[in-house]
Image (cartoon, rainbow, N blue to C red; front, side):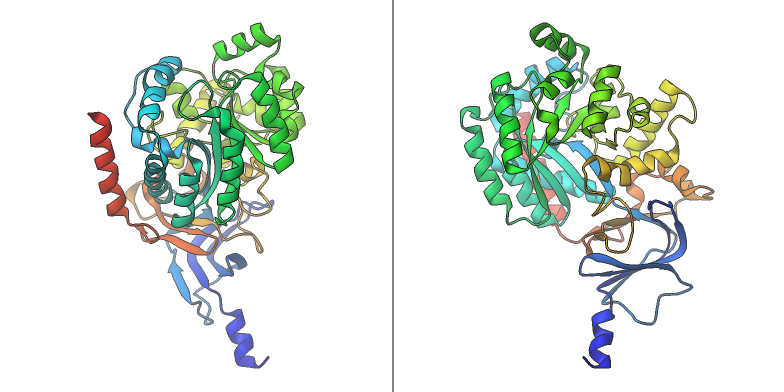
Length: 441
């Protein structure tokens, strides 16, 4: 190989320079005037420079006056429900589900509904800094297709809710087989199985799910102990909390994440910790539906890895993780006292700890050589961003999704200077408005 070939081989595909890099690595290093070189979708080098290196990349992004950090992880959402944003507000969870959501999903739920709803959600998530989301919904092949087309990452969980009547659950395992086969062609999709809850799925089917997930080495995504009535009903029926019941049937042997986890007992926390179950905190949705507050401080103290989720836009009503982080942090401070959860903690929950909850920290969650180049640049140019004494405090308490300037996933630029590059934003918005008009009739 001659010198020219060597030179061309070492030219980065993408260089991002000029910002303050929050690596979120084990040393929690912060690099000013940072430059990140990316080759083949992975981080090739990270360093501080006075100006971009003379060896120019094929593409260079100016991130000066920005914080550059790992892409945010939305640990729990229902992207297809984005078309139901604002459809059923100011209602408690049971009535919200049974009187409004299940009937409208039964009427309108389809591949087309989920595909368009997921594209709409992805637009919002890219714009607000999410690079990986963990989804639970019907017709999840359509969501996986939207992920593939957009370039974002998704853990796409095909749900199972026997009580909803939306899908024919008698054929669900055949549907799972078909779903897994179709998602093999989508490299940025991690397929998962997403049974709704202890009350939404019968015990006999739960036992089959355990076997199916183990056989296919699948991730399992479920709702857990979201309300006191869920726990009380489970105790009456089985003599156990849902967490203990799932341990009894062997569910926690799989790679599991549990959303909500509001009504946990100390014994539940011990079980979750012992089995390495990730917990997803969804504070805005939980408070809006009146269910309670996840014991994040106690979970983290016990060694449970916590991620932050927005839940679906029908129960939040937005997918802005930075806004969610601000609310989550203040809620934990109110519940536990100042300093029990810090700004730095919540940024870790959004990034590296979220990756650990999903057992993906070898690939993402921090900016390190060899990891996938999933990162965002958050602008510091607005008046609410001047001055910045502590970048973690700024992200936790001041920044919003509207400050995200650039988004990169696997070395591919999804958004540059606030412009979405991989999707036709206007066409998606136009079609979503039309869906809204039809649903409202």
